[in-house]
Length: 473
Image 1 (cartoon, one colour):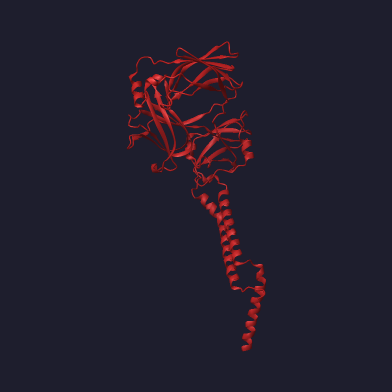
Image 2 (cartoon, rainbow, N blue to C red; image 1 turned 60 degrees about the horizontal axis):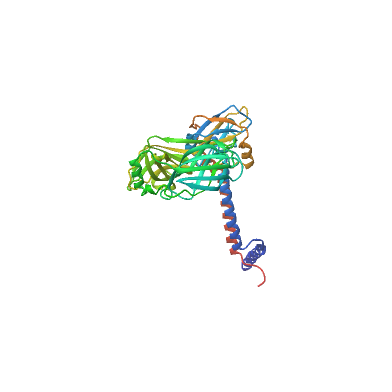
């Protein structure tokens, strides 16, 4: 019996020794743990990619809108109406286009901001002053297309001037172009309008600008009260000659594209005063981009700072300050500014604060939210019908290749067709949990394989720790 135990012990020792001799092929515990950690991180990355890369189907979207048109086999553009923008999610990233065969169709989004206008600069070459009147000679910085407006750049204010514009090609003979009033109350208050329109435009090389004080017909007590509220001494206006340093014009190019804007009009917005007496305009949930906010106000005189507060959720307590601006009107000066540019992407909840600073609240009739028109561009095929799908929180923007986008989106000057979006309706095939279920089916085999690899790696590490090291010594 003793000899049997010795043989068993010897056999066990030989098998462990043989296995120990082969363990030089297995990494150390530390090295193996590092390899396992990298493998797990890689597998997690694969899971994330697989989760995001799964193409969404028609049943994954809550809303649909049929598209219609008569142009095929060339780029077409579809203006996206307010309802589609408001009910889509992820800043229009959940839009998908399918044909009647259920095939996803690549598209490109376009924003109708208009072409960048060419600016023409004018340099001051001469100025004269006599008996309260001033005259300036401006020379075009470079030749170009016809100037359709002139914005005078003054170094000092405040002033209110009557201005006449003349043009010349040689600097000797002059032709009348325009007349108007310019106002600049800076630095007393941020109110200025120093642009004059040139109805017929001009391609001349020189401009002559003649200025004199603009008088207000009669004494307007409301104007004096308005200045006193702002702390402005009206006698300081026009005390100093205007120091003009130049001007610039917007060109009237034949291929100039005018920006197209859509708007949502709130005729009776919810309005109340906060604890500090400021006017709060709560537009509730709009889910729209905001490039500009325009106000309809009855008051003849006002100057108010305005703040835009937006929130990604419906809770007003989560609102964040998105931008500031000012609105004003001076009736006696025929000057007003009742729109503010903000340039915000899709905002869920919108609140506007008009800072009154202990002054009487304004009579605000309506508020308009404006945004540059969004268009969807694609190439329809003859014999196919197309439907736009949207309204899915779990879908990200499609990853179409740049080559496809360049082919789909018509370049400036190219011919393109116009299609239209039909009435938005609920998607009867919508399965709210369908996207999650499909992702689970995709990820479960990968996750199970990852778990098996992890368990196997842990077992190898434990075995490696139980085997004695081999080698001399």
